[in-house]
Image 1: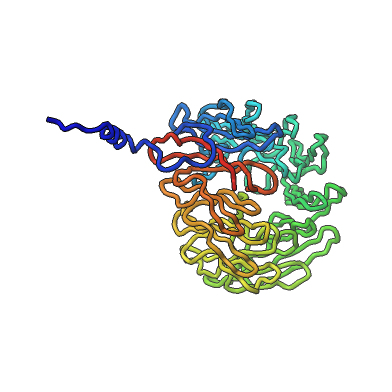
Image 2: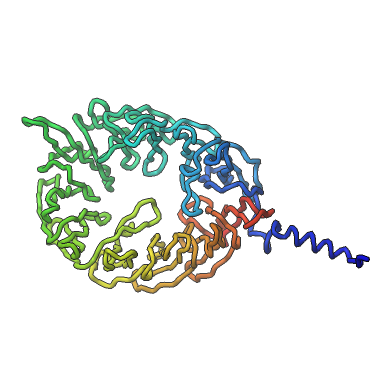
Length: 537
């Protein structure tokens, strides 16, 4: 006879059989706003003053390589609106769906518009997450590598944008949504200087008549020069300065370069063709690098006509301007295994730093550079170039041979460097995989270094706090905030956070009380799966 078993016995059997589907441990911090394992966090929309926080959500599309985009709005109490579909069958790799080892993208502009790429023809569209409006943006057209769609580019504030419709046509969109069709004289995307671009808020382009046109925010075009084939420029505190190229016959076709000051209207012809020249950040000097193979660099002051030549004992160096100065830094070689960093500037002899190789570092703003944004520090290595990894050091630019401090341990890759408001540097370094980075804060003035988190990814850093995913395994980790002063860590969602983003706001990207939207996905199906919102401590 079967022995009697109490009710607790079959309850235990049921729990054991379904335990793999139950959540592990306490729920994540905050409020669940979307309960769906297949929902992915795309991006957060900048605020527009109506008090709502909008989160873009990606869901599987009609095909395995497509996604559907929708938006959920949260009020001040984190009450979620019904999910609103925006556009279907977009490419999840580009635009709002771009991924960086689980980190959120940052492609939504201040108006709530986001650029997405359609999966069927590769064309681009602009979707407004606030109004739901969809506009074509940069249709697919034949380029150097076949049929491609190009994303738009924006003014300094992001309020204006230019979107290519073909290789020689495009649409200029102003902050108020007003659109102007632009005809270009040469392809907008090409090798070398572009045919169109923003300097500050002004849009400059070469039209089919080879006239250089300035389209300011007032939308009243100003013709600046004729016969222009290419141009480049820099934005200075006094306004833009442009370098122009023309093809003239004298008696056979030759290239002539000049510098134009749009404010004064003064244009100065350069004493060289300008094909290997560049403007200094202050807009005063033009550096000609045509003699680079012989170690010769020529500075030309277009305002006074002064010309100065500086020579170095090396070759192969490409100059990089120290921000805000007329100093050009470069790594040059004087033999197969001999290299040095050289510093050249007008009115001074060249300075050599032997055995040093200048390195570009990711400062978290979409481009790599060898200097901090304020120009106070520079990055370099003395590790042999044949080494698989480089130990990166940091030193002051006003004392380049002075004290230097190491930013990453041997046998690791330096991934990113963020300069904090107090002058310290937040660094991430990993031995093999980017999502196994250790986060360290280094004081470049003293060399003091403290490890804040291990084996993960830095997501956001503010004035006093940072946020990241750490102890990552199988693409998920602990969503953690860390006080940059005390190193105190707070885990908001343990173990299974896929991606996270902080609410767009003012100058402090992670102030106390900032709302954090994140995607949670347990190892197996769980009621906790989906999109959550929590608050930074």
